[in-house]
Amino acid sequence: MTTLRPLALSVLMAAQSLVALPAVALEAEPINAMAAGSNALQANRTFLEEDAYIIGPGDVLELRLFDSPELSGQLEVLNDGSVPLPLIGSVRLTGLTLQQATVWVKTLMGQELLRPDLQLRVVKPRPIRVALVGQVERPGIYSLSVSETVSTEGGPSTSVSGLPTVVDAIQKAGGITQKANLRDVQLQRRLPGETPQFKQARLNLLDLILEGNQSQNPYLFDGDTVRLGKADETPEEAIELASMNLSPQVIGVNVIGEVVTPGRLQLQANTPLVQAVLAAGGAKNWRANRGNVELVRINRNGSATLERFKIDLSQGASNEKNPPLRDGDTVKVNRSGLAKASDAIGAVSQPLSGLVTIWTLLRLVNDGTN
Image 1 (spheres, rainbow, N blue to C red):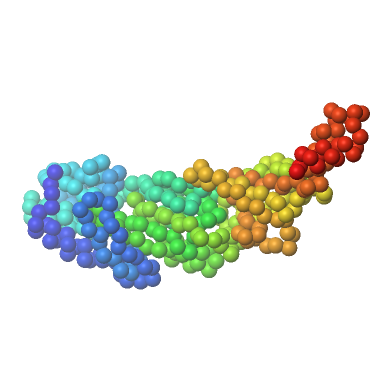
Image 2 (image 1 turned 90 degrees about the vertical axis):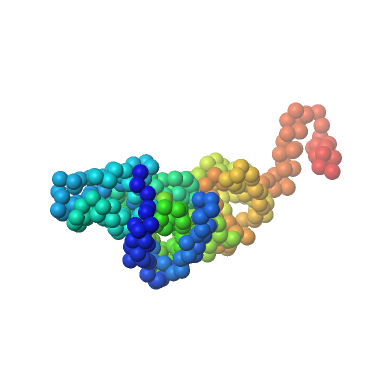
């Protein structure tokens, strides 16, 4: 396999300066490269939409030699990142931009041809594989193409044509969770070069959703990582975001205890706790303890949290008094003291009815509760 020679390397460095990214709106910051011993490439202010396409395994290229049409043809980038060049042999092109690869191939072909005038272009790009991590419904690795069907949890399917964007990837991952921090979404992207080096840009998807700023929804490249962090508090716009196409549309919640129709309910995403109790028919008149409603939540790591709230119809959605619910939550409306006493009397009086008086039953109940 042909490797970079000193002369060609200097040519490539000059070509890389030609595709340097201009400084514009989105901030990027250098991060550590994943490969051991590599240094992160410094990146200041970067415009993601103008990043150059980086050649990788699976791409199909077309080499056109103007003075030697018999040597022209299609080249497929193999798993090791190499392509078979006529007269040259196997050459590694992975990690290079199209312009860098053109300069490199022209330099190599110039060793065999008098006039190596050529054109190199991508005729069939490889599928785009991106990683979605953090506060999305289904984190993982996703393969995206120019024709996709995406949907959030419980939402309608939507056909998407064209190059995939950050929003398309989030929708394919099922949408955002309730705790997603849309004001600080991180996009990690590889930079050109054989040594893996990356840059990291920050996006504000809330600005995209509320203001329509589409510069916050850049096109994705193969190998990108989209990371949605966790917000310290539920956003003020949580109820409004529930109607957006980035959020799951329907959640399943269990409402049990002293409600009219206990059971599992299908509710709109981010429905507050009090509204979920009302959807179950409301709390029973004298049996429900409206000041002792438990919310049991199973976390992704398998742990569970238990919080207590009271039913207050005047409260809007808030983490402290009326939290928006998540898929899988369980709401339990506990019994009032009167309901506990009534149930205790009923449990004792059935087997003993006819044998003891009501005063004896009350004394037994009082003894059992002391």
